[in-house]
Image (cartoon, rainbow, N blue to C red):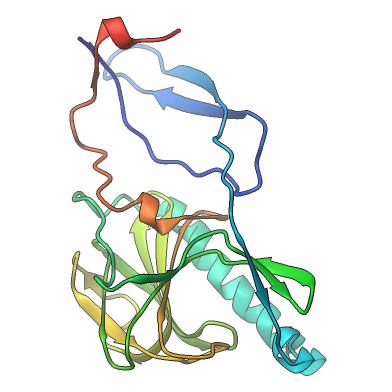
Amino acid sequence: MTHGWRALAAVPFDRADSVAVRALVERAAGPTDTVVAWLVPRRRRAPREKLRAAPGLVQPPDSLEERIREEQALVTGVRHQAHDTPRLWGEPFVRPRSSAVRDRFGVARVFNGVLRSRHMGVDFAGRRGASVRAANRGVVALVADLYLSGTTVLIDHGAGLVTGYLHLSRVLVAVGDTVTRGQQIGEVGASGRVTGPHLHWLAAYGGITFDPLGLVGLDLDAAWTRSPKRARP
């Protein structure tokens, strides 16, 4: 049997060509090696959702432009800061709710015939006040009432990884709290720009937002083995 390492990384949603992956291998004694591998991401097909809405609901008014820009910068800062935090989790990630998924990652949102955005998270069904739980151990990095995402909690899990819990009606944690996997951190709501109660769950690796369901059950500490007969060059 051969042995190797497991690592976590993210690729932008619309990336179609190959991606260079570089890993530093540090040894207790001896030089540090750099390993480079070229990976070809699998193309992901995402459905389109056609919606009709009043223009005021599709495009925020100009008077809110500065607020939205400042809030986006705040969230971006939390996401990039996670690279400076050591890995805080050891167990596989879990879903923040056990309810049905209402809307999946990557769905193209076409408002009034114009492609406006993609759904960069996963929506879970839930009535107002239903529990929302942390997907894994981490430190609460942001609790804020944002224009687009409403009452929002961001958890810094370290090693560049952040999960977000949006549109909450109530928050049960504060910035700086260390939360455990499965701990209740808030309640489902309909705050922000939404049409009804639900939980929007997102995951980010630095500046890249990816499908959070890809984290569920992922165990980076499991033994990695590969049979030589099945190995490919």
